[in-house]
Structures are given as C-alpha cells and as structure tokens.
Image (cartoon, rainbow, N blue to C red):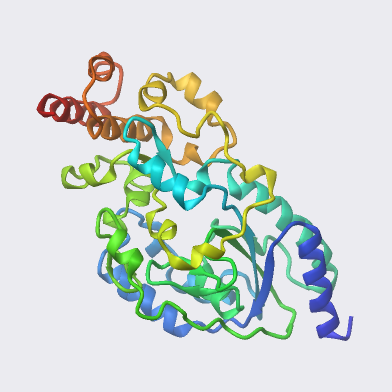
Length: 350
C-alpha cells in the first residue's frame, strides 16, 4: 500500500475491531527517558529486579531489540471494574484480602497477546520484519514513554500513564514496525500541582514527583520481591496481598475512568472480598486451581502465603486467626515461617 495515511487508518480500524480502546504511533527517539532510566538504576530503585539492568539500552532503543524498527504502535485496553468508594471500603476491611484491580480477572498478558497476534498478522503483509515484534509487559521496552509520545497519555507523578479522558486504569502494549507511518502528537502533562498520589502512598514509595522507589512499593514487595518483606514495610501493607492501587484510586483524573467491557478482566468472584483466613487455608493444589490463568501466579505459592501472613498480622486478633497462623508454622518454607511468627507476635500485642 502506497498511502501510509490510509494504512494507518486501516490499522486503527483493525485495532478497534479486536477490542483495543485506543491506538497511537510514535517514532523511536526517547533519549531523555533513557537518561531517566539510567539514573533510576543508579539509585538502586529497581531493588531485586536485576532484569531491568540486563538489557542495556534495548529498553529505550527499539531498533536494538528488533532490527529495522522505525515506529512504535502503542495500544491500550481498559480494565477498570471497581469504583473508588468500593475500593476504599475494601482496603479498610482488614479481615478481607485486597487484590489489585488488574489481577482480579484473567492474566492480561494472555488476553492482550492474542489480540496483538491477530493485529500483527494483518500488518505483516506490508512489513519486512520477521519474528516477534509485539509486546505486552513482556520485553525490555519503556512502554509508557512510547505510549506518551504516541498520544495515549502522560506519565503521572506516580509513574503510571494517565489519559485525560479515561484516567489510568488501562493496560498498554506495543508493536514495533519498519513502516514509516505518520506519527501522533505526544500527550501533554496535566498533573499540575496535584500531589494526591504522593500523599496517599502507604509506604511513601513515590520519593519525589515522577520518582518511584520500587523497594518501598507494595506492588513490588508483594509480587516481584521473592524474599522476606522488610519488617518496617509490613504494617503499611495492611490487607493488600497482591499489589496496590492507592495511587490510582485517589488520582483525580480517574473520575473519568472507563469501565472495562473485556470479559476476561471482570473480577473472579473467588478472589474478590475473600476472608484472609479462607485464602490462607488454601493448600498448594487449591491455590493452583483457584489461580489458573491469573496474574496471581507471579507471586508463587510461597509469596501468596507470605503476603497473607502479613495481612493477618495487621488484622484484629481472633482465636481462629491466631490458631490458623500457628497451624501453618511447620508446613511452609523458612521464609514464610518468619512472616507467620511476626504475625503471631503482632496479634499477641493487639
């Protein structure tokens, strides 16, 4: 096809047909973001996520990751399903487990990859790139920077992408292409003087505007981190057993959040508003059955028990919760056992 504008319109049409909520195109020059990443790594803000260092400049230079790349096609899919009022209520209910909004449904990687695969198959007949050139949080890509330059939103002070019309409750994905498609206008920043996300963060992980110390972030501590959770971080975690939404829940722009129509992202009733004690009783087999196809698998069974032990240590003491903690002392790993002992100690003090 000779007319690149026409091809761009077709790609947009195809993306809508496949269930993407928005699409934009950028070039591959994000030098300033590369400097920001390098400073972030020097500050050790990535914690034990050593893969962030592993790929060098591939994250910010798509042509090093996929040879011949000229443009990045960024796409987004909404997953919002829990109102601010309900989310706030759930966080305050210390007897029930709070799971981050994005993890309540099917693992987004699988759902979005299927959509991407279908879209790429239509684009490929115009392209010379061979091999995989589509990604959803699965390759060394500074996806928020490319999405910003593609006009999908700006990077907020909490480091999430925010869209002026739809808030921040969405996943982003990208396709690298050798087609010199017309690029879109980058999004402007609209955070202004607002610092709600910084003030609300339970562990003060947003150490400065646009600076997140992952080592303090509950999402990192309960998912990416495979070791013990630092003792000083345990109380602020509350009942959050997988991830944290606070910075998005209280972002004023999310009053415009768009409810998800993707059925895969609707909450699994077996995970929503479940008592901590019920979840802590799950055997490994039960956990595997209940979390099949879920992002919760990322934490592993040991991480699951560790996180629940911390949450139980943060709830009001009951005879049943204390007995449950004691009953699991000898059937878990040493790492989990240490958290159970901490939780029992906390309950003894309450």
